[in-house]
Length: 438
Image (tube, rainbow, N blue to C red; front, side, top):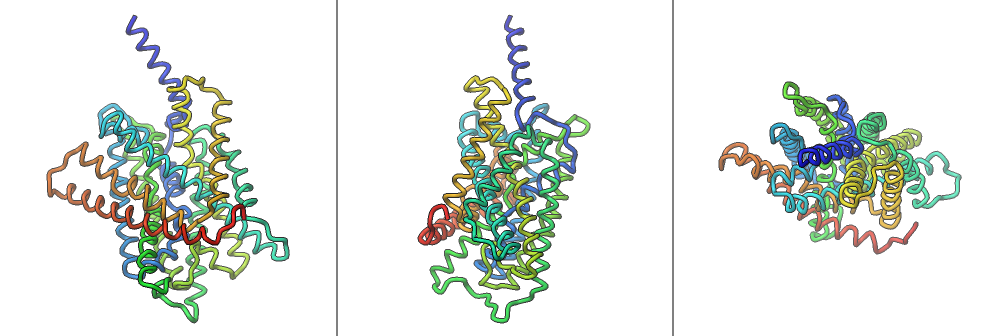
């Protein structure tokens, strides 16, 4: 009797996993991993890198860029290895790995709030980015047209998400992800080549953006948060790896690592030129979105902004899928809802509507970028994987692994604390002159 009930529970759990967004399909290829990770990594954050450089300066800016590239690649490798830290078991979601390391309840409390803030916060920022880029393209292509509020452009962008959000799983959005990854490479290339072609402005300055020492210090903190946001995408890494098949002979980590290496090569080719040439061309007059600083040639700037819209359309979905998975898992497993299409239809539409509403009310691109980058992206990407690694594998004190992990922890904590402080000040300053629903 007990065996029959146990089998019934296992079958029910299997049926639910086959319905949920993350575990629905496990036929992903290594290049699926590459495209999903490029889409997640090379997002709106790269457009703020020249602005971050203007806040950090040449030396500190390039140093933080390089250290972040190395540190986050290392923590990505750790998470890929820990996906199957226990033989025969896969940790398909970030919080499952957290529960394995810290315990059932503590693991949830440590990981779930952070991952939810990362995913939801990123989608809000992509709502803002999509709306702003649509508005910029419209202004360039239709100079004589009557100005349209940013609110309406955000709503137009959201209408795409209402449609795409009903694709059932990660692998079902691979076409969207490929388009988004290609677009991210295209607009990054346009950003840095246009900056390089334009050359340095005649009166370009590379000193601090603020007229006071205090202002420059807070700007420095904000720049750290912006860099942290640009590199942080590990929040969806385990969920992406969950779509890759795994056997004892061919574990998922091999294909996933191959895809991650390809993704990080693309990251380097996009991030460093955009940051360096964008700052070189505009100095401390660069805007918090480099494409907003590029006005000529007009057609190329318009195309770049359209590319951004296509990219953040896919990026929104990559960060939304884990949220859909978590919402639907709670409703089916804890609240005993039936796993039906209309449950998915209602819950996903509500999520898209809420992120749209918040984006309309608080469209502070630069400040939100840095605040979220420091507050939650730094922990989930820079040092939480290291803490889990230390708990699970317990490397010998002062060994190479132990030292590398503690370096990333200290570096990540500094980014978290300083980036959040600087960004909060910037949001407060921007809010003074802001009118709702503008």
